[in-house]
Image 1 (spheres, rainbow, N blue to C red):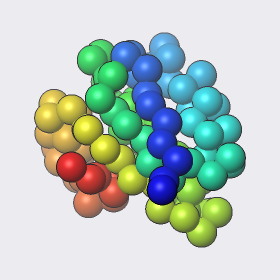
Image 2: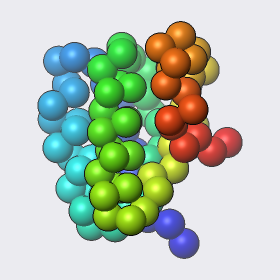
Image 3: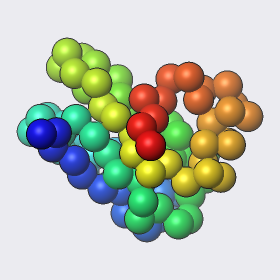
Image 4: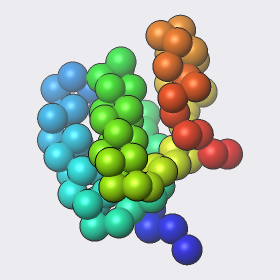
Length: 90
């Protein structure tokens, strides 16, 4: 069973640094999935944080799955051309 952690409701430029640190701690403890269901307010910083979390997991030899990615954030990822980098699971 994978260890999953959840984003907060907001992941914007203002909260990105704290969210990044919190997620990195979860990944260091073995988390292999992040649940984006709580995410209601976000900007492109959310993509940067998700990708940084995935890099951290990869450095540990793991894959971080992204679940419940909001449609608007998935669309933003496509617009920036980074959607293929997200290990999104439905």
